Amino acid sequence: MRPDKDVTGLCADILGDLPRSDQRRRGREYIQGLLHSHGRKSIRNIAAISGDRAAEQALHHFVSDSTWHWMPVRRALTRHVTQIANVTAWVLHPTLIRKAGTHSVGVGRKFSPVMHRSLNAQHAVGLWAATNDFVAPVNWRLHLNGDWLTDERRRRRAAIPDDVVAQPLDACAVDTYLELDVANDAVVLIDARDMDAETVIRRLRASGVPVLARIPADLRLVAADGSQSEPAGDLLAAGRHNRRPVLGARRDAPVLVSSVLARLPSTRVPDPLMLLGIGTPGRPGPDEVWLTSHTDAGLVDLTRATSLLGRVAHELESTGDQVGLRDFAGRSYGGWHRHATLASAAHTLLARRGRVGTALSCVS
Image (cartoon, rainbow, N blue to C red; front, side):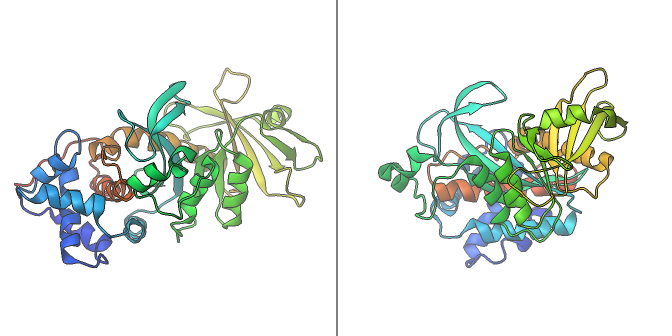
């Protein structure tokens, strides 16, 4: 297969700082294999695209056992993304990656709020760059529990670094954004209903970025003109006279949006936070409750931004599977991160081409 010019250009941007020429070459081969191989993105299938009989062993070493670190590549990928797209939101999206066995790093019994049952899976948090017509992942973290971090035998086999410590999900999610040191100050979007939502909002706000978080209706807040904390749903119900139709914010249907000013109970000084209730005409209360520090944005823009959570979930299921984001079958911590990094690069290229959800033809 002849080199794909788009892959070559992307790799020049994001792999140029890898210390060895063979690493840069293998990275390019891996991304091209992710894009053009069929079926599950195993290293064998990826290597078959190159036509090199020795490629499988070389690519396995490059991903699972090599010395290059993924964070410089992810930072370069983020710079690339911000140059080709006007990023309007950074979406933090926890996801379960189902696994059949027990040896993949981080695998265990995880409860799925979507499926309402426990699964054998890895738990990862992705950071996605998003616009109205472009979505691509740029960073990942594995949410590892004590079963992996306190078991020295499992930890050693997976080569988990010493500085990886147990974290609650909210800390893992926020760190997925903070560790990338993003220069673009677009709004950070997150579904915090299964986390400590107040901690998420406080930490992200402390970093100086606007936040738009979906929260549980029972999260206690204080009205801007009040002194006692109340459930967010009750604050919205008290201000239901502010409920108004918003058109053009959601593609599927018109919505009703109510808004009131509020603050976190743990903050003594007034907080410029806006509580949003997004509902469906004909229903008495909101279907979704959101809290944002992005008070300068209009209701249409805020409501439109909330739909990016669903967009990311859709892209993970479609394009993410197309480039093998969830296909890594190795056992090492570093291997998982290197694969996720290169699959994110492949996803970015598909998004840039406008080919999301469609197959690429091979370049022969």
